[in-house]
Length: 130
Image 1: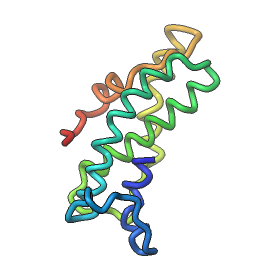
Image 2: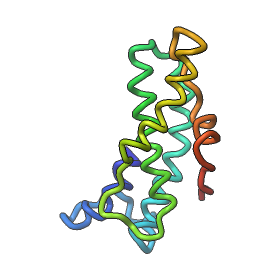
Image 3: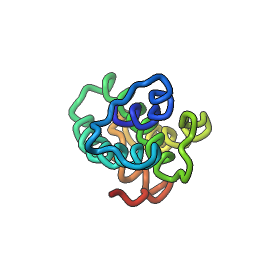
């Protein structure tokens, strides 16, 4: 939810919606988004560890969602101007998902998916968090 809120700050403001506590709001929409993404990072790491305890058929779609939504946050963190709506391209989604499918299907029959930290190390350096 934090990623969705951060991604839609501008759109929500245009229709008079705000999901941020007033006492925590920053000067710009982009700063607000980055603040939320910084908070979300803790939950992504925690969720990544917890997913391994779930059954295979539950773990796979949740892991894919985690990777894609985390990437939305990472893209926002690297922005200097707030976008209309941040999205992850199909090509980038394939790049995010392919490593764990490839490594896990060639080494084991179970999808014991790699950690978020390993995925980041393979694809890009994580941004500095607040």
